[in-house]
Length: 324
Ligand code: UT7
Image 1 (spheres, rainbow, N blue to C red):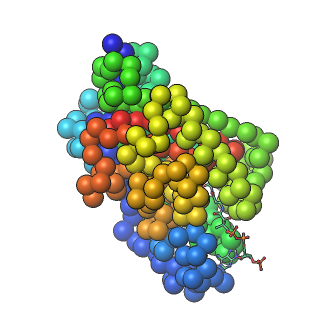
Image 2 (image 1 turned 60 degrees about the vertical axis):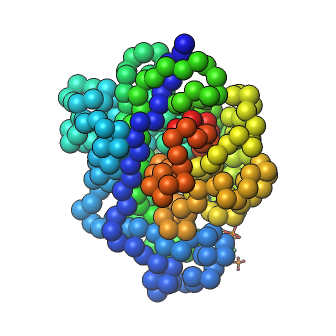
Image 3 (image 1 turned 120 degrees about the horizontal axis):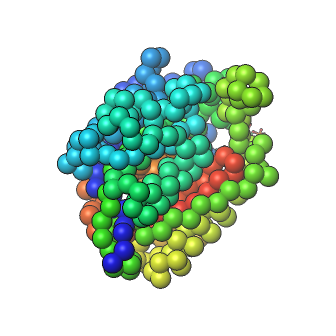
């Protein structure tokens, strides 16, 4: 018998305000045609002024807790994966804890940009596996619209706001891939690529939060290779094959990246959960948002094998194999 971290509930939240490609093309020199063809994005949700990352995180968490049949008192730890915290400090997780959870539990943010959710899932999984906590709330939440350069057409069209959350609970397994729960996580980084995808400021360097800057083509090139590699290591570590995977639930940056990765892995496109068309790239929120979308529309079912994979600034990248 071993301990497994089982996903008991999933939730998400998207701000009401939707901005289409056509609307964006009135603000910058772009077109629906270019954005659709190069990225697959058709629209994104943008949080109004006054609605912050913690608000999205709290809304998503309420849905996840309800789905798990739990309330805030049942949660032993909360992690928020975000690059767009409400404040530089304290952690956005502190606001989630104050709003929904017991005082006294560990609450912290994880900063691994688009890989933040998979990193946080790995951290929470390890806390559960050593028996330090019995439950954990893991959230990916972003208001990326707040640190975009709205005059830079090469980046501002790509991102959106949103949040997704999962409730993990310690369960028992046999140590095989038939167990429910997180079967493995693999995390990586390579800081030599720091400048390729970054905010051009920070507390220490400029005393501002900076704006998002990306050399898109270079990120794309690395993403396709790194995503395929980390997906393969997840499969190999568990003695399963790609044909056993029911759903690829990837980070949503670009439809061309999703298509090219699934093709490399020999996974049919109908096994890939795609939300980039409706949400754009929501960084750490994109995987739990996609997971909740797949569960809500009835495609993803309890007991199925899910492969999550991601790549983002740092560079950071990683994967998680999970049986729901
Ligand atoms: O979540 C973190 C991971 N992030 C990613 O994985 C993003 C990875 N990168 C990408 O998704 C793609 O590289 C982009 C979508 C960012 C760009 O697509 P691309 O096919 O690599 O285009 P490009 O950067 O080579 O630009 C092609 C042309 C350029 O014009 P010229 O130099 O050929 O005349 C750009 O100036 O498209 C132009 N362009 C635009 N045109 C209309 C760039 N952005 C736009 C735009 N509208 N929004």
